[in-house]
Length: 464
Image 1 (cartoon, rainbow, N blue to C red):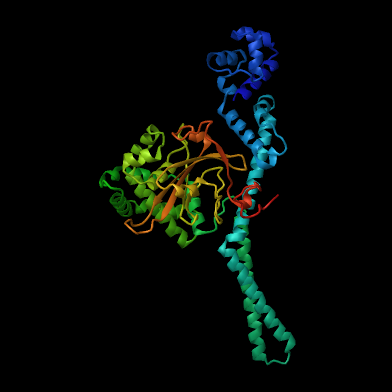
Image 2 (cartoon, rainbow, N blue to C red):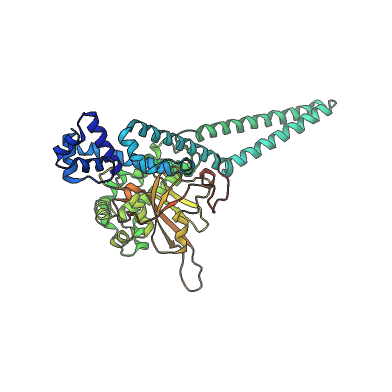
């Protein structure tokens, strides 16, 4: 931030036609010291910063604001992106750009966001073209239909003497297969229209994710209805407590859940409706186990410490992670959490999205994610400070836990829960990384990651 402050003070002083010596006199320092501040060789804060702001007819926030900090972080991350770093962009001079030419700084950030959006669309389409079962089945149906039409056509051309009844049968075959091909073509057109839309809802899982995303992972009507019922969940161990909470949710909160599912326009299939009810029922059970009126202040008091919250509420890590994603993040200093869960095969089996975090839907995620590393150290929370090719920075918290029966000779199978938050949000938690914590360059998937020198790459990127 020093580079922003110095440049901002210098440019504002010049615009007001105040000499360096005059401003130094007004705020009570020497001209030489002010010169060091303006050229980012000395810090300015506290009373001195307030005096400078007053003399420059600005609020302190206008010199040292959150928007400028985010913009600085964005520009520094852009400078370190693989395709930009080779051009020699001066990451340490980003603050100068903001201070002297804020419009150009915002323009560069805007262009980077546009490029990121285009990359996300390419990634989504690339993942679907490679992995989506619907596309494979559709192509198979098209090839089968074409083969049938071709065979019938060849017979009609090569054997013009066939009787009228047989001729009619072949005509019906051609007609039926052409009709099937038209239906498949229309389905594919609709698919790609939706695939390129802002809200890409293609499968029942996508429908449920769209529901939770539209509500920002929080359902206030369920929270309010669960609050007075939470006293009825009085078991002391996690397993029986969850079973009791789920039964209570099914008997007392089903009406709220059915209304949410019925009212959401993007839940179009019966399978999607059933999956949405199951997910919302689990949400309601967790709201009964950790009612918002108790969980939210305790989460803030404990610095959003996952393990401490699990102990305070006698919950498992998975339940704590879900409750953290449901926090009202628009409240001041309340971080916003995303959530991922993977099995031992590395498949992401559950996800609650986070703005700006590009996550795979149809392909495996980057193997460098802590989500996969955690199973090497089960029952331990692992923190990872990450840098994506887009320049976005996130903090990941991963914890692998045993799932299934335990006993001598019984194989242990693990699933991993992982919370994700922006690096800015992490500053409000016990997981805030300091400068000694290394930043790990990672990606979303190999097909969308431009880091060609990565030793874990298994597929070429879509572009470049």
